[in-house]
Image (cartoon, rainbow, N blue to C red; front, top):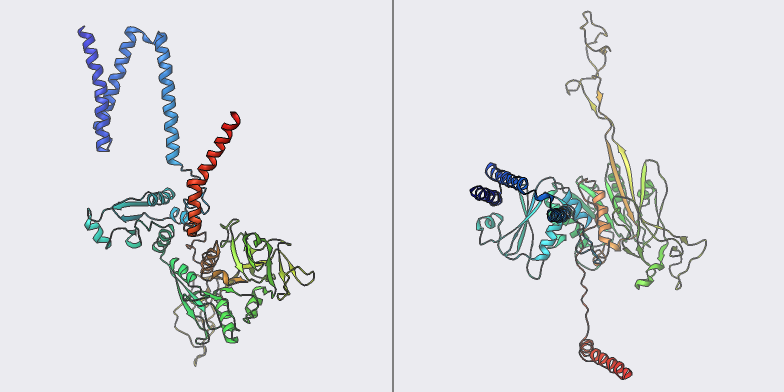
Length: 559
């Protein structure tokens, strides 16, 4: 009896040590020597107790033991499978977003930006309440990279941290990257965290480069401020992507500024002066970048520029009948086919709209690479109409041009700079003539390590040349400018076409060319008071009455 009591006492020591080891490890969050020693001791005691019991009773030979063992193995197998599924679920996140605009999925631009974070970044949300929608958005960002972190802070509980960021009110959201801090937005019950705001600020705080974009003015181009026909939304979009914008009038200054990364000519209505065209050509020849958006029925007299690049503006008007189902006129072009270019590579079959556009024709030019950006559907869905005054638009063989038609093109030209001589001696100039004749040989020649003798009659030391430096000049041409005006800029992919074009032209490798985040669409139904009353009557009285009548009819037939 004493031995049995001793064995029972030893057995209870095993679970005790196991529980103690687990408790110490979980509370301290450090699995050091003490918790591991307790766990190992408890496990050894339990194993010894099982071996002792098995030698005494030979319980493993009993049928009940075998049945129990099978049950235990089956249970452990299920637990292992469930644990493995949970591990895969936490490691590999798979979601299916069935919303129209992929509202609960990060845009490709956000994913690419977060996944390429070079250093840790943290989002600080100074708010008492944690909105589930905001947390879901931040979790989506965090799934893309371990470098992305976020934390909710109550400013009253941590006033020092709030003062460090300069928090003035509840709901302020800040980004912290390296030593830089930037306000993202102020959230509230009516204003939740926006992917557009967060991605925009994230791109700004991680980018150390700024590019200057000039908009040519003075020829009836689209205004830059928020008035009718302006492109102020496009200007704001460039500002959000860390560009700086300024108007440019080449009639006042004869040369394009040296800090110009991109020149944009958006919808000129009048002719450019010869000197302006010459200045733009010189700008392109020294490695500049130009975006041309030329509307139909206009002639800005820029043919010398286009001819150098092999682009011709067709004077016909593009007609597209595929938009009739969406109640669009035949001159409003819906584009769903894009070229495999960095500007449009992520567009897929999404839609962009171009009202009143002209086709472009591309001629091959040596040393110029061209890629079509936008294409219309094949004939008979689209064609280029020559008789624009006709009340009935139909294709005329021999006069009109069959689709598919090119509406936008991107071109690249390599520019090789001339070799720069690097003198091997002092840069002090040596006179070409000397009052004292210099003999061609010296009576006491000085030996040199060079196998080639250097003549003493040469007035300038033999230079060595640096390798050719290759620059690149870029040009993007669209047969329409109205797709970027206020109102249409936010429609479908119109804004992405414009912003991606400027980003590619700026030749900044860290600029992301993709689809921007989308805001949720307002799908509320606006109805009149009469319509609301009719819906109420239908829901409260009419539908129940119909159900009651159908039940009465069924009862009457069975009766």
